Every structure is written in C-alpha cells, then in structure tokens.
Image (tube, rainbow, N blue to C red):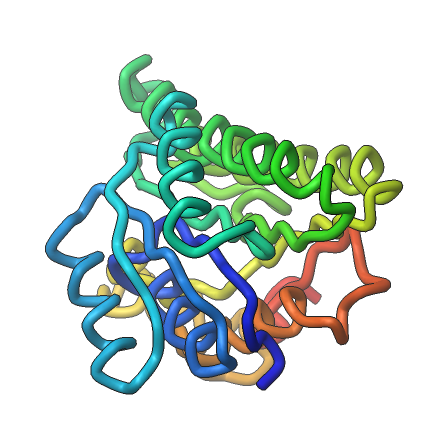
Length: 247
C-alpha cells in the first residue's frame, strides 16, 4: 500500500473526482478526511470507503472561508494526527458569457476555486513545514490552460491555481514539501452538459486523441502517484490527465 499510515484531506469530496480520490487514497492505506459543503454526498463518500474496509470521516467546511478551513484542519489533526497529504479539489461553476456575467458569478467562482486553493495550500503548509514533509495537490483544468467560452471566471480561477501551485512549490521545496497540480478531463458532474448535450458532445470528443471520455477512477490514479513516495522528486508540475486533449 503506497499511502499506508498517511493522513489525507480531500476537499470537494462529495462526488466526482473528489470522491474517487478519497476512495483511491483509502484503498492505498491512507486515513482520509472528506471535506465538502454537501453533507449528504460527503457522508455517502465516507460510507463507500468504510463499507469497503477503509478509514474515512466527513467534515463540512466552506473552503472560501479561511476560518472554516483552519478549523477543519485542526479537527482533522486532532482526530487523525498530522496531515501528510492535502488535495484542494473543491469547485463550482457559474457559466455566462463575458458581457452577461455578473459580479456575483465572478466572485463566487474565484472564491471557491482560487481563494479556496490558496487557503487550503496555506493551511496545509503551516502544518507541514515544522515536520519538513508533505504533499499538496491542487486541481486546475484545460479551461485554465487555454481559456474557454462562457466561463471566464472559471478559466481565470483555474489559471490562478497554476500560479499558486508553481509559487508554492518554490517556497516550500526547502521544507521537503511538494506542490503539484492536476489538470483532469471533463468527467465530473459539473461538466455533464459537455458529455450529454449533442451540441457539444461530438465536437468535444473530436479534440481527444484517445477518442473517449475519461473516468474519475482514471483521474484518481494521478493523485495517488503525486501523493506517494514515488513522486518525492516531483514538484511544481501540471499533470494533464485528459486523453491527450491538451497536446
């Protein structure tokens, strides 16, 4: 087991990639704290783990609020001990064309994605620095690497997450802490429209060299690698798990 005796925190864990990461970490021996605002989904995630013999608990927290992130991290450490792995995966979508987007839509997405990633990275770093070890994994998107129509807020936040990752990797490397980023394919419930609407489906698939949709489980494998000792000399990268779409 690659993550045996490790403690991991995963935000955005109520569904999709976050849920798959929680399950994959637990299967590799980690104690996992699943974090989300969606209590029903979060509890379902942890039940899937415990029913399979793994160890996981759910904590509710709004990642856009620093005080809630800090409180959640304190609870995690009191329950499971020092945090070894932090995955900042929480996200929302508020789509609108540039000329129609409201300030509320823009601020909401920036708060959850960009501020939430910064808050989680900072909270984890403060706890990992004294121990001179740790893994922080953030989540960007192809939208953040190339831009996308109708989601300038989302694209801006996701590109900002790349900046957080690369800057943090430079600051924290001296402490033995790695900070990396994963850019997954469009496979989460937030992107259902792309995969199910005939207006987008064929056009999107044409851009994927492998010619098919990915799965949350395929994304989770990349998280396990970056969280493991196998990736001890990997930091500051963006790992693209998208079927070749970004090539």
